[in-house]
Every structure is written in structure tokens, then in C-alpha cells.
Length: 606
Image (cartoon, rainbow, N blue to C red; front, side, top):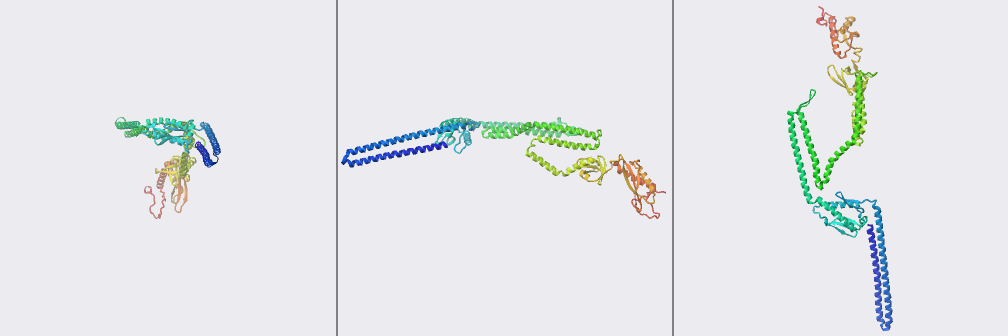
């Protein structure tokens, strides 16, 4: 645009100079014409007076004026030549300066390639008006590509059209490419030379595009499309035929080769389940093979036509890129995977070692002072939990995606849910730990928890289960046990003996010593009551109508309390009846007027 503007300014100066020169020459010629007319007029009037002298004077003046006009014209022409030469020199200097500037920019200014079908035709370096080289290149690429895909393309019909500021390559009425003086300077040639050279390149490329997108090529592609479609249909038909044959063969296996699969006495798979499993696997294989065929054939079908070739590559990339990324991710993840495996194996065998020592302590083969055998398994569970938690903390940085925000957000969300919803759970776990190391009872002990009496059959981190004498299973949360009082009947029964007791009332008419002996004899006659320490009797209170006696006896099997109590009460009744002693429980109101006493008939004296 700068060069064009300077040419316009020079053309205006030339036009102004020629116009002024024309005016000067016209003025000189008008002066000469006026002088000649004046001379002729003066000659006519002076003929009568002195003709020869007047003519000579006029002629001298005319010759002098003519010489002056010739000198003026000659000076004007010399000035015009000087200006023209100066203008040419100025243009040459400016052109040289522009060429030097372009040569200096050539090494640091990359050209924008015009690429058609992955083929670089030429480069564009300069702008045209307000259009950048990138936009010019994309416009030329789109134009050549659209023309090249015409079935009626005639590449030789490209022609060149010249204007004052551009040279354009045309096809029919469409501009294919345009070149300016600036483009020619970048290529060190004139616009016409540059346009002719680029026209030959574009013609050759259009011939290549015509071979690729011509009518005959279209017919070949249609035939190839139909061939691929036919082959794919045959493959699917053969796959379905083999699938039907496989189903028939699998159904026949039920009566021939298939046998039930047993683990010890448990039948894992009978022949019917095996046939169903094989049919499912065959169907899955059938769909997988058909899917693989479609994955291969669909991109091939789309790649046959250039218009859908990019879509074929895109479809194939949708399938291939995830598979490739998965394989690449697996290969890149192998070092981290080996690290995770080593950490897991180390923790696994460490847990096994701790479990072995826990088993030795529990069986009392290994004794540690101050550490009870029933602590072994709970302590092992705690240590195992801590070891696995430590293992997870070590493995976490090596997990795929552990450093992503989504993975961390999910981890925080899960942790928040667990923390909000596990208050009671954590409370039970902590209560279970406290109960374990407090040792209020152990598995098999007969305990009483509030109103529940039974044997402890299971202790977990969350609950404790008790079996009652009525064979009822009662599940009690550990936190409830920790906040309640517990009576353990078995803790000292075998070492010191558990004291059972029962209260009985007799009349004041019976001597207390006689009653004591009766109760002690009844206790000693009861199965499960220890002879040593010897049973003893306490007189609890003296009521208004009777005294209350309490028999106490030692037993070592707390689980048989109910039966021992039953036998003890039966013996007391037997011995009291034999001794003729009347039991006053429940109360009896009787007047001693000879009415019957409350002794059973078989014990009455005849």
C-alpha cells in the first residue's frame, strides 16, 4: 500500500508538471499570435507612411519572441527530463531499500504455507489490504480444494487477469489467488512472473485433485463401498451361523460330557447351570466378534469417500485413542503397580506374623507378664487394622488419579459421610476396646446384664451376644454394656467357688439349730454343691410371724445355677416334710384348734 501511494503521488506531480508546461507553452504561443496580429494591423496602417522600416522592426521582434519561446520550451523540456530522471532514481532507491528490508526480514519472517491435501504449494509473506497472510492462505486453500472436488473441473481454464495493483489467477468468474507488488518483491520477480509460476503449480495440483475426485473415481468408490458392505454382511451371517451351531453343541453337552461340580458335599454347579453359563459366554463372544467387525468395517466404509474420510478417522480415533490411552496408562503405571504390590506383600506377611504371635499367646504357649490370653485376638485385630490403614496411606499416592481434584473431592466426601454417619459406630468400637481391656467377662462366662442373664457367646467390635438359659440370643451394643453394670457369675466360680443363696421362712416354734441343720443337709444333698467350703446359713430377719433363713452354698459351675437352685429347693421341701417341719412360705393363717397342718400327707406321722 505504501508503494502504491508513492506511485500515485509521483503520477500527480508528473501530471501537474506537464499541465503547467502546457499552460506556459500555450501562453507563449498566444503571445506570438497576438504579436503577429498586432504587427499585421500596424503594417496596414503604416503602409502609407514608411513600409520598409516597420516590417523589419516587426520581423525582428517576431524572431526575437520566437527564439525566446523556443528557449523557454527547451528549458521546460530539460526540466522535465531532470524531474523524470530524479523520479526514476528515487523509485530505484526506494525499491532497493524495500528489497534490502525484505531480505533482512526473510530470515526471521516465516512464510505462511498454502497447503492443499497435505501438499504445500507455495508460501505467502505479506498482507493484502487488511487481510493477514494466514487468512489469505486459508482462503486460497479453501478455493483450490472446492474447485478440485468438482466433477466437471477443467484445470487448463485458469487464466491471469492484470489490474494496476494486483495480478489475479481466475477460474471462470472466481478468484483463485491474487498477488501484489509486495508478494513479487518477496519472491524477487515481477507480479506477472510470480502469477504465471503460481498458475502452473495450481494447475498441476488441480489435475491431482481431478484424479482423486473425478467421476470415474466416484464410480470406483461406490463399487468398493458395496463390496465392503457385502463382505461385512457375509461375516455377520457366518458369525451368527457359528453362534447357532455353538448353542446346539452346548445344549448336547448336557447329556454327554458335562458333570456336576462338587466342593466336598456341596454341589457348586449342576449341568443346567453349566449349560446356562456356556450359553451366556457364547452369546457374549458373538456380540464381541460382531462389535469388532463393525469397529473395523465402519471406518473403512467412511474412508472410501474423501468427503467422509475425516469422519472415518474421527470414528476410529474414538475407539483407538481410549484403547491406546489405556495401554499407555497401564505401561506407565507399571512402576507404581510394583511399588503397591511390594507394600501389600510386606504388610500382608507382617500381619501374618502378628497373627501367629496372637495365636501363641491365646493358646498360652507364649506368656507375657501382664498380658492376658483373651487380649490376644482383640489386640491382633487392632494391630491389623492399624497396619492396613498404614498400608492404604502408603499406597494412596501411587493410585491412578490420586492427585486429581475429583479423586480428592470424592475422598473428602466419603470421609465426611463416614464421619457424620458413624458416631454411634465409633462409640461402639471404642466401648468394645474398653470392654476388651477391662475384662469384665470373656467368651463362655455366665453374666447378668441388667435383667438379662446368659452366657457370652460372641464379642465383636460393635456388639456382644448372650445366650439366655431359655436359648434366646440377645445382642447388646457395647456402648450400652459400658454404661451399665454387669454381674459375672463365672469369673471366680472355678477358683473360689460361686455362692448361691436362697431364703426360706419357718415358724418360731421350730428351733433355729434344727432349721440350720436341715438347710445344710439339703444343700449338701444337692448335685453341683461343693462340700468344701461347707454350706452355711444366715438368719436374715425376724418377721412378725416367722423368721427368714438364708442358705448359702458353693458351686463351681455357674452355668448350672438354674438346675442347682431347683434341686436345692426340692431337697429343702423333702427334708422339711420328713422332719415334720411346716414351711410358712407362702403365708398361712391358721387357728390352732385342731385343724390340719400344712405338712404333705406322705410326711405326716401316723
